[in-house]
Length: 79
Image: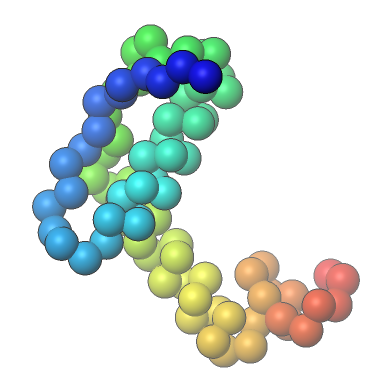
């Protein structure tokens, strides 16, 4: 297995390293799927981390309200 160092956005707070990790992993994976390598991989934009934070919050809130993602009701029914 080989590892490639890629540019990353520096986390500016001390409480959501997991959000940063998920955001960077998604960003790098998309780039690799499209281009097949790390060439030209730009650092993640801070807005992407903010959007991921909101996406996860919305997901948690929907589950806490008894809803499945996409409005499926959360009871395991097929939609």
